[in-house]
Image 1 (cartoon, rainbow, N blue to C red):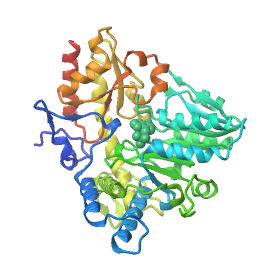
Image 2: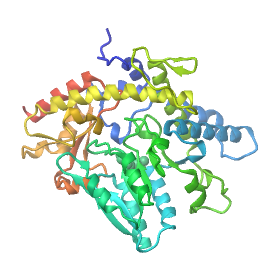
Image 3: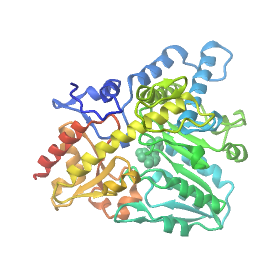
Image 4: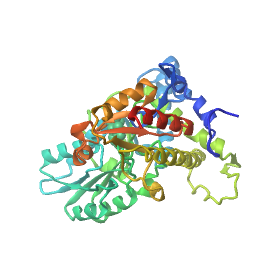
Length: 445
Ligand SMILES: Cc1ncc(COP(=O)(O)O)c(C=O)c1O
């Protein structure tokens, strides 16, 4: 039997074997990567795609010769892959350095359509990358900013407050899909509905949600959605979805020789082609995960169990269907990890978990946990804890991870923020158990 305890639908041994980094040790301890929210590890195929591009296809785009043509093809393939990942058209997909850079660029362009007296809404729960670009734009344009607050007791968005902050002057609602600090998943479709009812745009930050759940921009009907491929097993890059009508209407800040065709008019300067090659491989990693779980028969997904499952909607590619299957299995596995982790953390005296802890509400959160040991001992603050855990091979994060408005609001910023434990699908129940034992030992309980 495998050393790794597996959950039925996900072949964890096979998945983990694809990530070379997972085999590392620290001080003779196996490395445990609970740092996914800061960036996940990559499967070998992503590494191969990046080096393969550099070794064979490396050129600038748009030239009339072989490597440049291949580069254009590589970019086109990645756009098609991300269109399957997000459920949109390929010309609605734009690549950039990262989510923050893409959002600053888009906020400037959206700002061109706003005037003094207009309003925008941001949330207390969001990563600062979905806040500061909007604040800067608002300052420049004389736009009023409203903040949607949270329920402190479970770190969920106060939807009544959000609805109350939206009115006929609101032009944009910027909200996160999932919190990178406390793991809360927001009711994004509802948020988009509230924005649209007021005639406002909805800009969704799906960076943290990407590795945990299926993104469907068509179903959400959001105007923009942004994510970062390095959070879901790909290279360090950002991807922006925009509805075609906006991409055509709005005016980018661009250089004159750059075409006005979409999506290119929204991509500034030379892109990171090698990483773009890696993006296709990351999406195909998801798809292959799904294909292993639910083998494709006659182009359709069949499920081995008797459980009924809707067939892919018409127009859905086979790869999209496989990504849907992968996410179902990832969800199931992460849920098991989360249950085990929360049950264990709750046994540690004076340890406080921020966010939802009731298993009956786990559909409202993902497997990212923010905790503090509140026993007044300086050695149990987030940074010393993360350092001691790191020496034993457990990679966690401490601080605010740029969810600064949240850590300030909850008054933990001055004392080091939270210890963040991020669980993704390549983590195992055995790692969770070892982590809990180490944490108990370090906490002296
Ligand atoms: C929820 C969330 N939004 C935005 C970002 C910023 O992403 P990027 O590093 O791609 O700019 C992060 C990064 O941690 C994040 O977790």
